[in-house]
Amino acid sequence: MSDFDSQILRTIIETAHDHFFIVESDGRIRDVSPGSAAVYGISCEELCSSTVQQLEASGVLKPSVSLEVLRTGQPAQLEQQTSTGRRVVAQAYPVFEGGELVAVVSRSMDMTDLQLLQQEYALLQQRFSDHLQRRLGLEDEVAMIEAEVGELEVKSRVMREIALLLKRVAPTDATVLMQGESGVGKTAFAHLVHRWSSRRSGPFLDVNCAAIPEGLFESEMFGYCQGAFSGAAPGGRVGLIEQAAGGTLFLDEIGELPLGVQTKLLKAIQDGSITRLGDSRSRRVDFRLVVATNQDLAERVEQGLFRLDLYYRLNVIPVTLPPLRERREDIPALVERQLARLNERYGRDKILSRDVWQLLMGWDWPGNVRELENVLERAWLASEDVIDAQVLAPSGSDVQSHAFIPGAGASEPSAPVAQSLEEGEGLKAVLARVERDILARLCSELSSTYAIAERLSISQPSVVRKLKQHGLRVGDSL
Image (cartoon, rainbow, N blue to C red):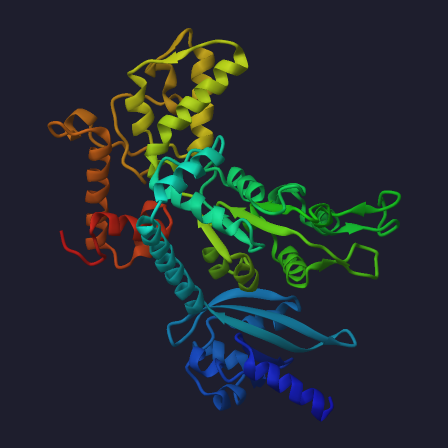
């Protein structure tokens, strides 16, 4: 290697955000980036005078990703716990010469950065919420939003804020990351972003990443030329990314992508161009990217199942759609809309009995809007002119006599409603009271908003919002 090439490599290593190790085939460490010392708690000189076998044995590397590559000859990714108490995601790649493994290049990404980004996002989300409350003419803007969202219901404050945020970012080309449980309406909101954007006249491609086999992903996403592989269609095929040119590409279930596929997608996003299989030239493609997942991508990064650099690239405008149990104000409008849709579809005029509302408002709806719609359709088909509570019980459960705690599982009923209500107290008030009691208890038992979010199976920003709403803080005693 020339002095010039060595200097370029040295500059890359010293200025990179990630922490690099260059390891020889016998495990000796040839070079490390300067930031590695702070992460692993040992000086660069000591690291370079050691081997990955020694560092793993002494607990500096727990475990060594480079050693895993030396054992298998294959790229590897894993999570490490360093001696300094940091959690990092480490990736390593073999270097071959003449078919022989001669070195390993690894890089580690400090997860502390990701945790700080999560906290900053929660703070920014709260500031945005406060800003919306102070805006003059907010009610007029909300009314306009409600008129534009069509079948989506944004009666609750949190859904109004989400709709307003999407309305503002839709005209840009910023990538939107939709997060939330299955059935909350991520696809419907992705359609809304497209409709509000300057690309509304272009195509909207809805792609379920989990439905494309890993072996076919590259040909489906990037397309291929004639003769690119055995069985290729005559004339080749235009890939999904090219089909989305001038419009919006919506990638649902993005968390299901295998690591190898993630690398190819990241390159296409970064370069703004794709190369069809069997082709030698790249093609520029102009498209807006919206992605969605029902998984915690940050957690998958920590587990080594999702690339951190791709996560950063996708997490430009993160939007967490809350589950239905956290926005019960939307339930009445959703019910009325679905009932009207069913009456129109089947040519009848059925109505709901008054006794069903306690059930509808108290059920936890683990399947969210999708479950609500399915339950109503099943009850509609099983009823005559009036739909009563007996045929409406979600999933066939006997739940008419119980209210369900927001955020709890469907199998954990609380005390009967009659014993929970205070004199003159309505359903909305008792739900808020029970929610506050649960949060107050968890604030005294758990050490962080992340722990509370995990316990309640909701997002951390939702916990921050709810604690502020109820005037609670982590560490408060009962």
